[in-house]
Length: 317
Image 1 (cartoon, helix red, strand yellow):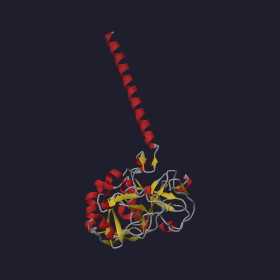
Image 2 (cartoon, helix red, strand yellow; image 1 turned 45 degrees about the vertical axis):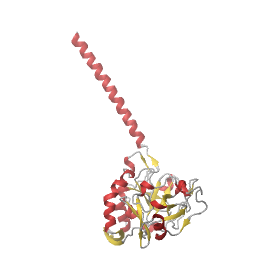
Image 3 (spheres, helix red, strand yellow; image 1 turned 30 degrees about the vertical axis):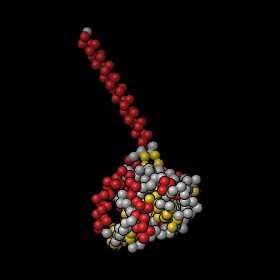
Image 4 (cartoon, helix red, strand yellow; image 1 turned 120 degrees about the vertical axis):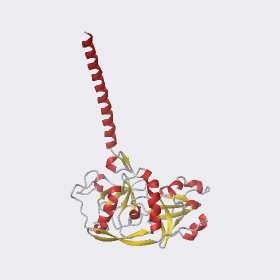
């Protein structure tokens, strides 16, 4: 199926004022999906080992939805304020700055494929097979460094924003770029670092490459290095080759990951009222059910009190 995704073409998304693509409900789902984007039982066909590996690793952390004209994309079960490339840290690798994620799905979705923000759905991951240390665009402005997930650039007729405005970037001060608990030091208001210069506009500050020497001069520290290795993972449809970080990094993520990432991870969308990108009606129904239960309990209490009163009246007579 993934091979089909990479060459698909079809419906056209419409850019909204926010800079994100918007789709009519019918453009999301194919014939194998219901109105909520869930695949009907028995309809899922996975014929490729990479598809199988991605589905087996990611299914319990989110849902697969269909974007007609593209194919399947994965949507994580996270809180509404979550965004990619925030729960982790940067390290220097042989191929550039590598993002090490604390999330249980991070070893796949930040190194294979790309992220796109779909209006009404939130952040979704578009699968890919080529490994890279990151998939972000950089912006170096005044005393801050910003990055934004690089949208998919496939030959399909879905328009995605290629140059988001500065407020969509994730910002860090220069001195905190190497912090291993970046989510605590993320700059929600980077303008305070811009020394009155104003925000970057019209492509100002964009850089193609962030050098190790620049970061070390900002922080006054030696940037941590990381080694990666290629490992084989076996699936029912064959073996896949996956790049993973060194053992020391994996151990660090195991120890710290759950504590840092857990507050941002949400139950599966069908089990909660609110997740990123949408509010489910189920939450309202649950409230109605609770109110109905309270009313029934009150009525039952009144009936019991009346019966008790009648019983006492008979005994007095």
